[in-house]
Length: 436
Ligand code: GLY
Ligand code: MN
Ligand code: MN
Image 1 (cartoon, helix red, strand yellow):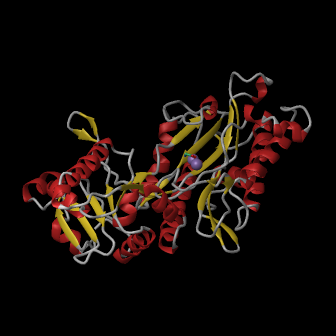
Image 2 (tube, rainbow, N blue to C red):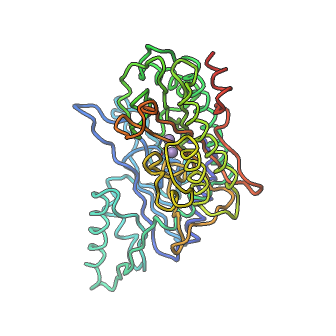
């Protein structure tokens, strides 16, 4: 069994969701297997919504929730056991396993979905589904609805309302419970250990890939099967490309290295960025800009607490970065005006964070009725200010090829916040000491 949680946790999540539905039937598919090339497939990763509700890690599965159904509210369609296929492609839970190990009230072969699902929809008022993610599934939903409609002459009613499941489910996913936070704390620790290894091993002349290997060796060794997203290991001028993933350049003495990488644990993401000198010693310009980004992160942390709104950490980071850029002479003008006219965006062009959870850019609205939402205990997000000055910048070339991002993962607690990734240093002295 793949799941790290007690199976009751998934039951609680399904109950919670069913309580927020008003009747109807919810249908939740998992992700398909995707072909990479020839007979090779991409490593399988279940759909986050599906996994959140089921803990079930096999492709070709669909969960159906029928609140109030006497014969059982949770039905799992999945692959049957098959000795020959399992010999070639790995173990399957099968229908019995779906019930016994994964807590389904009923399990049916995935091949029977088209026969059974229209029957489950009969005389239901609503169907809840997240459309727009998997086009094959979207077409199936229409097909099932049409089949029920064809039975109207027998007095059977088809659902007359189609409700987007995402809203209900994603509000639920936004607030992380204790069990999820335990996993996310562990994911943060694994990622931190990998970043520390990268700092300890990095030397001029290594390639970005070699440093990546040192870091990801720790991720795997400590139990993370996948990364939460492809690692960004970006030396020198590459540090100014926000989503650089080639990771194939040689690391030069005197350059900075920006690493943005996180381990995934039981499908939960972590997301850390650190920036450090390839040779272990910050130059004057690197140090000046690094101190600004670090001060921006600290200022943002100060407003990570219940009652502040989502955008406050970004506002604080922007203020500190703009002020710092004025101090070092890279921006000229009056502080408030530079902020209002977004002058800082020449050097800081992304936002200061995003929700974090099963997805690295996790689900949940950032605004409610066009107001930034208020931070609540259990919300997890990143705090990731940066400054980037590429080759083409008009500023003096001594500032060129400096890309800096410092990113940590934060959970809002009743009394403020906890940084899940603090084990990897950010202070210049601590980094230089670690690399010495
Ligand atoms: N690693 C993706 C991000 O920081 O948003
Ligand atoms: Mn991030
Ligand atoms: Mn990141």
